[in-house]
Length: 598
Ligand SMILES: O=C(O)CCC(=O)C(=O)O
Ligand SMILES: [Fe+2]
Image (cartoon, rainbow, N blue to C red):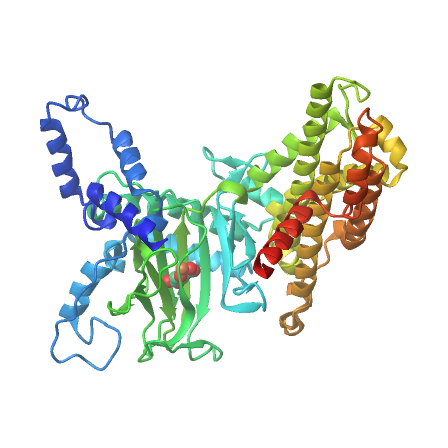
């Protein structure tokens, strides 16, 4: 595994130099001119377009998981200070060198470098969100077991329909542009009127729309930073599609902050982490301000430490840093910085700190538009199937043409598999994720009322279709055989899907019961999902399905080779309640056991 990684890394280094982050504008110019000189290269006469160069670099860099770790800054100081981390106050020269060597990709704009209009917009946006009560604690599940409540309150703002999942919790965004009747973004005329129509107050609306405008400015600034410090043709995106806005309290007001005890940096508002769920090589821009900054001795700080990429651990040879930045600063984590480093927020002695963390979330499966279109496209295929009869409508279930029959059976199986996967995705990735965040969260997210309602209705439709099929499977096996296209594989698809839902439901039952919810306000406690009250008990369904499967296998069709096959089937029928996968793994376990006994 490690070998593979370093091999790939070598390959990447040949193209991009010793560190993938170090493709500076200068070195790229060199590469380009070298290429142009080569007469043997058929493309040498053509100037490569910037997009194709970016694509080429992207291809060679692969994914962020394969990038090289940051270069090690060697601490050559003789009188090493006792502290295990560096700050500019303790040792300005060492701090600067280390920052530039092992923390390339971290840059910042001091408040005076930013236009006052930007400060003002942030100010009123943070204020408006706070007034609107948008900041909530998140109850997350870091180790997939016990839940914890974040020490900061947050809200997500972004492209309409975007979500951001971290530590097992899906955050639903407030839109930062107007939306049309399909809940899509309207980019050209942004007045906020559609948000007010949804139910957002005037003040909250203007806070959200302001954040959308701010975001465009931050994208522009980040792109300039990328060009200056990373590459004239950056591979990664800075087209931020959402921001997670944090509100945090100082050590003087928030007593339960966790101590940073690896390096003794003090109390943290946000512990060591990398931002997850982001597009490879995408940048992050963070603006923050401290309200009523006091003269407390301890200022707020951003802590950084170097990591060996994806699953690699901390690079212990590189000293971590605490970067004290004044209120109103904007810092950037460019390109693969987030992948090769962790960051944390060291709480200051006083004030309330707001930060807006602009990111490029992987869009994939996490937007309303994605799940809406997926559901719609599935629902439109439903009329091709008769679930009461278990057949593909335009096919002849009594045909003797084996290949035609097989084709219909396969079509039915893949339809049922898609139906079951969709039921699971809607229930666990959307509906439960919304309702677990409570009543207050629901009332604060008017954009999501329609989407959640539509998903709930679609869930009901899919459940109804599934239960028609279950009804058929519970009827006499002769009826199934004679009139349907039901096969052993279809039972297996259903057994696997209901088993998985059963496992996930027990996890969610536990999650709802976690004692953490006992001590939080009633309107932040999970609310039962309205659509799940009447759904069937999945455990019961699985045991029925196994029983029906077994009978189905026992009474297999009376084909011409029936008699010959019968004795074989008799043996098989003992395991008729197991899916093919389970039988296979059982027999391979048995073979393994026999082999070890030998
Ligand atoms: O507030 C900050 O400076 C950073 C917050 C952060 O790391 C996060 O929200 O992921
Ligand atoms: Fe972060």
